[in-house]
Length: 423
Image 1 (cartoon, rainbow, N blue to C red):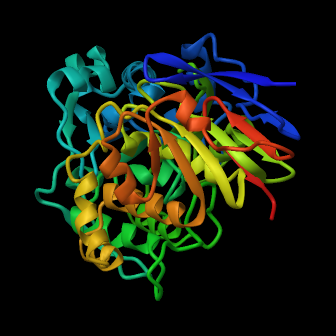
Image 2: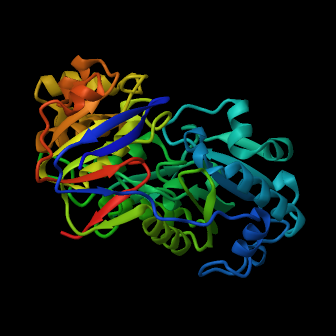
Image 3: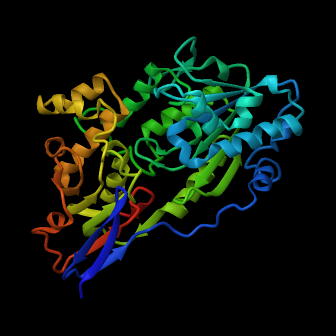
């Protein structure tokens, strides 16, 4: 019996009909319960439910200077502005701290500075009106040590000789295993030299390929993660506030306390909600990011493809639905075609590592291992150059594809879930 699918694509939808598949399995996020009373949940999380830590108020005195590290506008999905406001009110009202002793530091890494409007969106109007809010930059960085892998840890001076509280959103992450936590320090408030040295660890130490110890959900022996943890330990954050958000943008987890252990608990929750256990890999994976803005460009939409790879058999087929109305995304993204065409992509990335370059690199690696047909508005020449097979209509996406006797997985919101297969 034909299987009919409707998947999101940009601002619209794409209809697909599958004929003859042996099985069709829907992979989607697990159900979660949104937090209804966020102020009360916050109070409990920083007090009696603090993880491996004293309640926050017992860690501080009114004469302490505090730096609150938050993420930038690219992480607006976690609605940290609500939490930042609650934290500032708590420090002022419960701890008795003067507003002048509190600074909000935006962990930009190598991203551009935020505008005042963006600062209000990420930190809250309340924060901007009551405390000093600043963008991280590369001026006056302080060297606090060197990791065991040789990364010189240079951080923002507002992390030195002050009580440091981290606010971050925990998600699966391509390089670090999971986002959030220690990433507020490295790359968040570190210098470019520090970030480059850390991120290069995503490449294999001796071979021209990505490091197999690096990837989504990988922490054990992941050199990028372990290097970040060493850097964070040098700064000694006082406390962390870790947010878990569902695909509808609602807070479903608020795990606070010790900067390491509270974050690790948030990673477990992310895996329970967004990690979907599968007992097999599939012959064909059909995946959409869920439409705009998840598929605004290939840089952002890459997470969807990265997740889909976890569900497909070696040598299998991926039907990737991603509009990419803004092309590759960062201006430099398809600039990596030049070293690829020259046969020196690995060498060039090691010389000047960027996240955009690494995502380009990983997508190209995928294209050498899987047959990836992509419904997209991308420039076809650019898509083909990286190794994708672009098509412009749903009919062409299915043209020549036989599902007869094959196992098929469908991921309608592929950017939000990670298939977990025990090899």
